Length: 266
Image 1 (cartoon, rainbow, N blue to C red):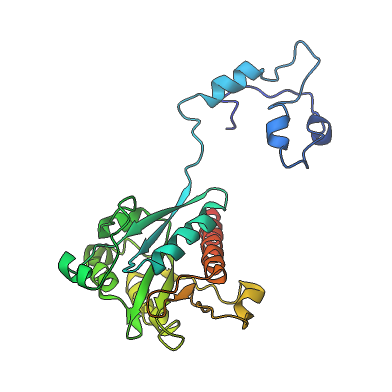
Image 2 (image 1 turned 90 degrees about the horizontal axis):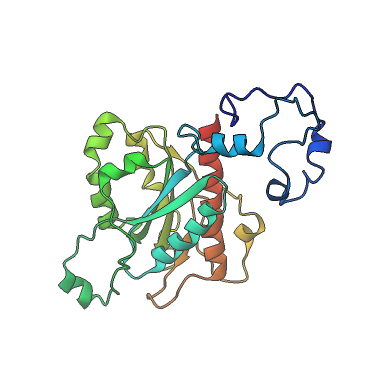
C-alpha cells in the first residue's frame, strides 16, 4: 500500500511528463506537487490534506538509514583522522549513515602520558562488543604493531566471543584502514593479517581494490593505503595524513556504503 493509506487512486491517468515537467531537475521533488491536479470535481484523487494525513499515520514511517560503524583505535590521532574523513564518505550516500566508535584503551593513563599520547576525543563513544550486532557494516581502523593490528583492537576482537558463538556478525560486510610508521611497515600486512578475525565471524571482507582510480597510482608524493583499504604513513608521529590519504579514506567510506546499500536491496 502506498502513502495514500487506503485512498482510492484517480481513474483519470495523467502522463508522468505532464504531472511533473521538471522531473529531471535536481530539486524536482521539492518543486513538484505531491499529486497531479485533476479538474474533475468528482475525482477520487486524494487531496493534499489526505496526503498529509497519510504521511502522519503511525504506520507511515520512512525507512531507517543503514548504519555503518567506523570502529577504530588511534593512539596519536592518525587513524582517527582517517575515520572522521571516512564518515564523510559514508554519509554522502543516500540512506546510509556512519557512526564513529573507539575501542577501549588497554594501557594505563601513566603509560599513555609517558608515550606523549594526546587525550581521547570525548565526543566519540567507546563501543562494546555486543553493540556490533546492530551494524549493517563495519569499518575497522587501527595502527600497526610489527605488521599486525595493535593490541587494543585485538583485545576488542577477543571480547566478541559471544557474537562468534551465535554468529551474530555472519554476512555483515567489513573493511580495514590502517596507520604505519614507514613505507615497509605493514600497509598491506596489517590489513590482511586481520582478515582471520572476519573469517571466523563469517563476515564479508570488502577491500577497495583499485576503485580509487588514478589516485592509487600517484607516485609524486608519499601516500599510504593499498587495495586492502585506506592508510596513512605516520613517520615518527609528527606527520599527519595528506589530502590524498584522506581522500582515499573518504572514498572507502563511500564505497563501503554503496556495497552495504546494494546488499540490503538484494
